[in-house]
Length: 259
Image (cartoon, rainbow, N blue to C red):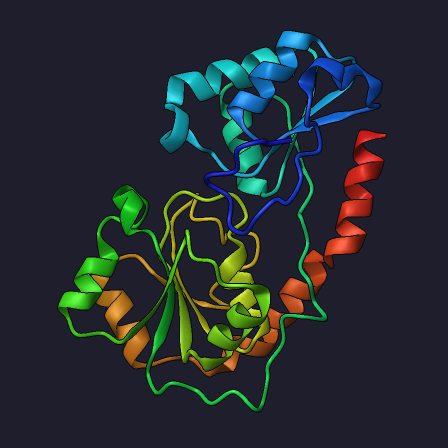
């Protein structure tokens, strides 16, 4: 798996493959990026899986990503972490299966001792990748909206993040390019109503519907949703996320898929 983890939320402590020259002593190699896939193809490991966690053309470029997926699919297995990524793969003639990473259902929960920040909307700050939210965050700041920013390169640990989720009045999912968007799901388990960008590849399509969260398509619709937060869908969302599954059980399923 990835030895350089620049684009993943959180931290990977120890690379699973510290030395790719001895990779064939492992039963299976799981790749999580284009460069992992390329290095694995270079050594022709007998059992390889690409766990596609996002359509990361914004990192590598559309052509490179598509070329590598097509090459990899000739002798390896591709598993996505979101169902909309299966459609993306099928569009380029590549077969794929889906396995959700799952959620830490026992950890992400509502804490009664954490006070709410009145009318503060939580958001993952994508401004270093402006195309991901089409400048929406800058527009919200200009409109004097109260935002609790969490930057994608912040060093918040899980305990701090749980406090942030619990303190927010709602959570905004603004991105237009994600795999399974984990942060809104975690926020929802902590009691946050979710307001999501209703686009095909925003990363929330596996759990955000009009019955579980509030969609928006225009900036004006987003402002209305923030001003009239709908708390009536929180329980339906929690049930949806529990149906997606816990981290441990889903990862056991992942192991079964690659056995």
